Image (cartoon, rainbow, N blue to C red; front, side, top):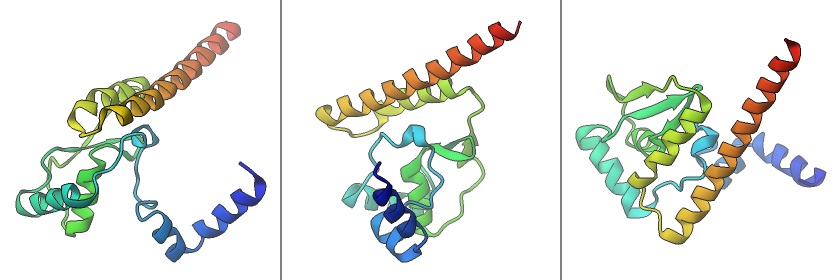
Length: 147
C-alpha cells in the first residue's frame, strides 16, 4: 500500500466519526478468518435484529482468539437490539487455527451467498488455509533444524 494512503487511513482511524462513517463495524472484534463471508444487510439483517429481540440469538456466537469467528451477524444484532447475551449465546472455540478455518468453511452452507460470490469467498478462505499451512511448515522446519 502506498505510504500516503496508509497515512490517510491512520488519520481516519484516529478520528472516531470518520472511522464510524467509513466502517461502522470497525470497532467490533471480528476474527479475520471470518472477513471473507459477507455480513447480512437490509431486510435480512432487520429480521435477525427483530428475531434476536424476541427470542435471543438463533445460533451461538463462536469466539476464537478473543474475536468473533462465527456469528458476526448475531453479534451485530445483539448490539443493534441493545441487549446483553444470555448464557450459552457465546461459546469459545478451543481448536487450532487450521481447525478454526475448517469451521468457517463448514459454516458457508448457513450463509445466503450467491454462487459467483461464493467462489470468491472459497478462494479467499483457501488462501488463508495456504498461509496457515505455510506457518505450520515453517515452525516444523525450525523445530527440526533445532534438534
